[in-house]
Image 1: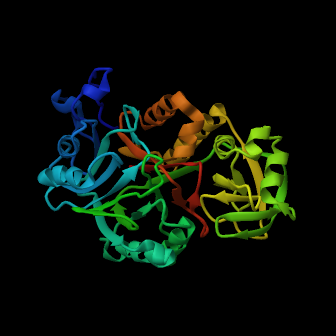
Image 2: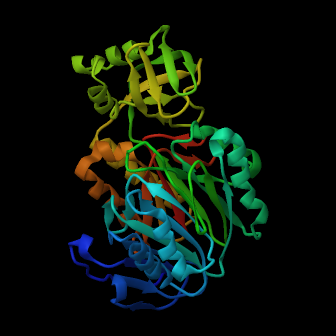
Amino acid sequence: MPPTLVPVASNPSRDSQPARQRVYRAGGGSARRTTRHHMTLATQTDRWMAVGHSKDPDAHRAGSEAVAAALAGGDDARLLIVFAADGYDPAALLAGIRASSGDLPLIGCSTAGEIASGGPGDAGVVVTALGGAGFSVATRVATRASADLRSAGARAAEALNDLESRPHRVLLLLADGLAGDQQEIVRGAYGVAGAAVPLVGGCAGDDLRMVATRQFFDADVLTDAVVSVAIGSDAPFGIGVRHGWRRVGEPLVVSASGGNRVELLDERPALDAYLERLDAPPEAWTDAAVFTRFAQTHPLGLSRRSDEEHVRFVAEADFKERALVCIAAVPQGGLAWIMEGDSTSVLDATDAACSEALAALAGRPPIGMLAFDCIARRGVLGTGVIDEVARVANHAGTAPVAGFYTYGEIARTRGVSGFHNQTLVVLAIS
């Protein structure tokens, strides 16, 4: 039986509060309650996950507070994972974290918003600590990723070569969300990891400025990089993937495309075929801002051999060439469906992704969950993101939740394809 966790009341005005922390330890043991940094603790010696969260506007202080809360989970931490708002000075943030964590392995990235058990945010830092004798970790970094994305993915996956042998393994990847076709990173990582090791993660954001994202590796602040951690565990991992979009009408043939540009659909200008199929408002045919808002809820679904389409976010329209520009590659010659969704279908997908991840734990309770959620889904949900994060936390039960809003999601559990848009990816850890 898992230990009982005692909830600690918190002030609803979260912005003014110090760092928060939730911890869950696998196995038996007794629970204890403390009010320092709003902690919730359960004690055992095998594996544990703890999450600290701060919204202090001072970067150094925010990093220091969040990591102190996370490391309070135990003195045998193996790894730190940092998700931070782009508005922070990243060097000061890491300095605040490293002052307490020393040379503990660390990976992380800037975000388009942060996720923690208490809810979503967009001006804070979330620090996750994994610890206990039941975990082993190995980290890697691949710089200058955009020069050869497939090679960068392969170099990042070499972390697996240094991993202590465990019954269960997963490779977590955090990539520059503006570096190019992220599916190439997945292909490169798959070439090293093979079919037996699942891939999971997300692409760094910059609060939708679309200028530059940051990746963190130990004490270094990087851009145009892929950072990774191979995690070995004595207990299973579970991955859930759902998007919540549904097909509109018949499929279209991608008659001409190159990279992330779709030139022709059914031998017609892609933009015209797309807008006509959706009966789009007149303004969407000529106004870039109107088109972007409209396209946010109408992605493309790509036909795959698996049960569910891979979704591609339609980022912009080329009104001159009448083409669509997506956030990732759309293969020529394949089938594409225009998709639609709403807050109900997106929230239903949240429940489905969490259930899928937990089902893979073979009946074990989670000690924590990591969520990689597309920023475009947040745009669809609006204030419903509060409900979305609450649903993830509800599935986690007494275990902590951490994550961020991404510029693309990574989840490969079968086949070689594993890059997603407008999708929620959940990693459950037992």
